[in-house]
Amino acid sequence: MNFISMNYRFAGIIAIAALLTGCATTQPIPAMSQAQSSGVAIDLTLKAPIGIFSNKPAQVYFARIDNQDGLLQQQIIRSNFIKAGRAYLLNARPGTYVAVGAYFLSPMQASRATYTTYFPKELVEQSKVIIRENDFVFMGSYVVETSVGLDGADVLQLHYKNVIAPGEATGLLTMSFGGAIHYRGTLLERKNDEQTRNELARNAKEDLAGSGWETRIK
Image (cartoon, rainbow, N blue to C red; front, top):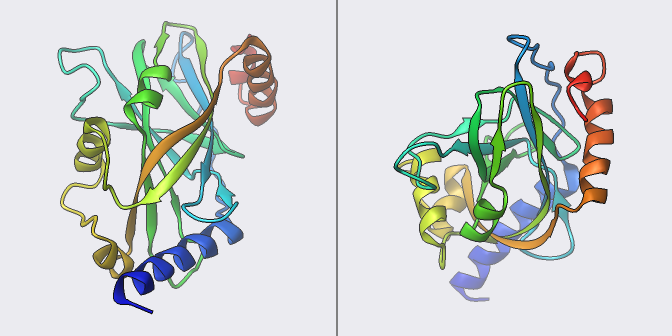
């Protein structure tokens, strides 16, 4: 077995272990900060670089694109509640938003590895929504394939890697021992029809039950 093959196998083992075990966390639902508070949600599945395994994100990164930088924003906004792959940004300021990336953590207690996927321009553009006061908006449902490393990444993926994880190595060998794995995402499936949005709304009402947010969802 040559050196490159060993590296790919090592990275694959890491990915499979994390994807098989999963990552479970408990988050409180953020309370409405004001009567006109708004929210946005996205449903996301991340497929492993090899095999048929998939994982749900522990966090999704959004960007608010209401200035001259357009899609290339210098700041990201983290989801503040997530359940079963449905990521929410609650108390979102009115404006235009896109989803730009996601991550999950290693389920192995001895490991501090993080796995971050950067979304391609196609997905970022298709996720764009406008949020107004007293609003609750769904970006749709997405399945994203992942490739270890950022070879072939587009300009948005490279940009948000530098925003989210500035200075972190993306070489395969370095990532294998550095505790941070970076993935180039490829859009495999997008659903945002009426049936999908209705299903997301039903799930969101259950996810946010008892918080007051469920009354905002139409």
